[in-house]
Length: 161
Length: 161
Image 1: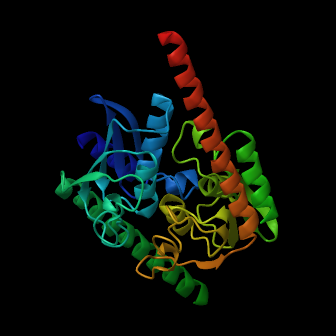
Image 2 (image 1 turned 60 degrees about the horizontal axis):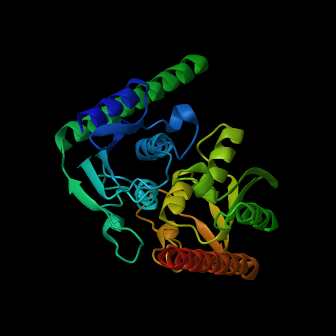
């Protein structure tokens, strides 16, 4: 999970929502990724999807049946679906995402036995570290937004004077 | 939808599950894709995800807010999540997928107003054409499987003689 947190930090450094993921196979990291939606201009570029794509390429298989996925924040619907489609048997995640989490918060899709694959989930691994990164990121983002708004208003006033 | 069916046929031609998708922006196709899981060795290579990736690259934005997605079969959890993440407002699909569909069959995630985006869904567009392709594909796949099993048994018998 420390490696997933490292990936989250790589996202934060470039202004992306700080979420990171790694995939482990036989004790070795075979896929890693961090959120890259803004820089990549692509809605599918979440940490988990990127890590899955890399692991599939590395292992030359769409089936990641002997892998574990570690991710700092509870996966969304897209990423949970990708985890099921890739047949990953175990997922470790840090903090919950009450707004979009599909593992425990809004849905519990990884345990849905109507689907052709279910996943064992371990919640709360280094959750504090993962959650603090999100809180700090969104606090800074709100601050930047406020500063931008203030600057726009000041420019408007100056133009009106 | 005819273009999505054309994509489904491209998948079938190479032995992939025949599902196709296109994304339309201002009346023009900006993204297209067909299922490529086996050939691409990647669990995320569903028709919708590939079409979304192409449309995002073409429009240089992760937001596909002015686009419509056409897909031959009801999207799964991963693809429904990708549709939400890409903020696509309208989805037209052909036939239902009772085993993995996340739009009407197992879940109704595109209409879930707890999420930050909801989607207007139009079901049943050329459903017969889309469904028939799936039925024919899986019938042929079962036939191939049976033939392989028979050949294996014959080889075993020959070796035992």
